[in-house]
Image 1 (cartoon, rainbow, N blue to C red):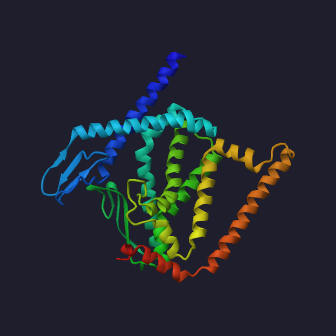
Image 2 (cartoon, rainbow, N blue to C red):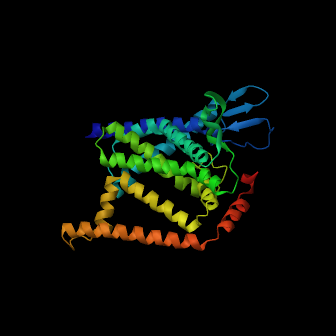
Image 3 (tube, rainbow, N blue to C red):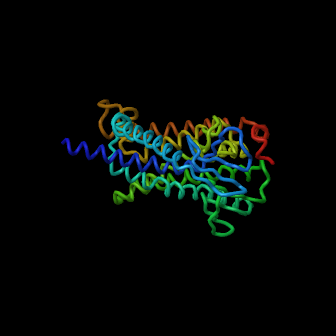
Length: 339
């Protein structure tokens, strides 16, 4: 037993070291303003700048700062993994193996880039459908369109669509289309996981990919409004992109927030069998009050009733709102985007 516990601790520590090192390397995308300096000299890294680039000279690597940053993120990662393993997951009734956590760490970055590609492709697809034209597309260091190439500058994702008037319904759908496409991809992956029996590694891969899609929409709506990036530290310079797009389409804020919340909750229930079982047993199904058949029927009617009432509320609010006012408020709130 002692040997088993020691092995588990070593696995958690190993996972924290890998995660901390990758996070420290990932902070090369975070601009670190180190006091007053020359405009052409850029500092990158967090919390300490370990990469210094001079537009007119060589790139400098501060290895001692990289080591300190790595130690900082290893500690953060270890605390997070221990918290999830010992407190968060057990309190939710969720059983997660160390093998799953290690596999999650390995797949985190590549699958994140895959879902990022889905996001930018969503902009391109919906923009093209609405009459626009894709002129440029980039993921991380990789230029996707108009040519395949590796670029020196990092950017989480970028898709330029020409031919659409800013503030129009078409532009709004294109703007919303990125996060909407990742959300739809998550629903498709959830249905695949729900209906099919797949191998362990395949399930983990699809779940990690799906969770990126689940978080893409709510993160992009909420975080830029409180001064953070789309992914906390990264991206989000255009503001709450999905919310602005929804406003351009004439969707009222309360209706949009409700749709985001319902979609996110529904996806979490589909992806987590344990969480789904807890909700059904504690909220939807009144334990011991009816026979199993009646309980199942009652649960179905409850879900249908909530969906019908939500649809009616969204419809009523939608037709009561002034569409032109929403478009004007979006432009006035983020005038930089109209340039």
